[in-house]
Amino acid sequence: MNPRAKISLMLLAGAALVWLVVAPVYLALPDSIPAHLNIAGEVDRWGSKVEVLIMPLVYTVGAVFAVLIVWAAPEDISEEHEGLSLVLIAVFVLIALMHPVGAFLAMDEPVSISRYMDLFVGLMLLILGTGLYLSASKLRPNPWFGLRLPATMQSRKAWTLGNRLAGALLAAHGLGVVALVLWNAPAPWITAYLLGGLLVIVVVASVYAVRTARG
Image (cartoon, rainbow, N blue to C red; front, side):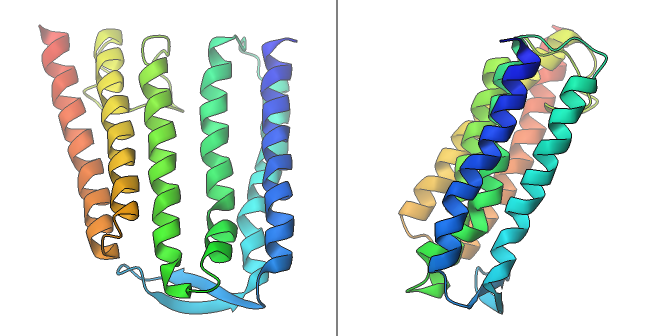
C-alpha cells in the first residue's frame, strides 16, 4: 500500500473511531450538559447534549477533505509523512473526543469536567511533543508542522535542533499537565502551568536554536 493510501486509511479510521466512541456516549448523556468553562475551570454555561457532536462532525468533514487533498497534492507523499500524519490524526481525534468523553465522565460530578478536559490537553501535548521530537531530524522546514519561528527558520540545523528540543519539552510538559490532573490540582494552577510552560518552551527552544546554529 502506497503512502497516500495509508494516510487516507488512517484519516478515515480516525473518523470511524471517533464515532464508535461518540455514539454510545451521546446516547448515555443527559439532555443538558456542561457546555462552557471559565478560566477557573467552572461551568458557566449549560447546553444541549447535541453540542458534543460538533467537534466529531468537524473532524469527519476535515478528514474527508484531507483525503481529497492527499490524493490531489502534486508533491510526493513519502513514508516519512506517514508517522507525522499519524501523530496529527491522533491529536485531532483527541480534540474531537474531548467534550463528549469529558461530559460523559463528569455526569455524576459536572464540576469535574475541567479535570477531564485538562487530561485530554495533557495527552495531546504528550503525543504532539513526541511526534515532533522523533520527526525533527527528518522533517524539512515547512508551513504546516513544527516550531516555525524566525530563530528555527534560519537554517536546517537550527530547525532540527530547535524542534527536537521543543518536542522533548512539549512531551514533558504534557506529562506535567497529566500529573497535575491526577494530583487533583486546582484548575487555575493547571491553566497557569499550561500557558506559562508553553511560553517557556517557545523561548528556550528559540534561544537554543539560534545559539547552536551559530556555534
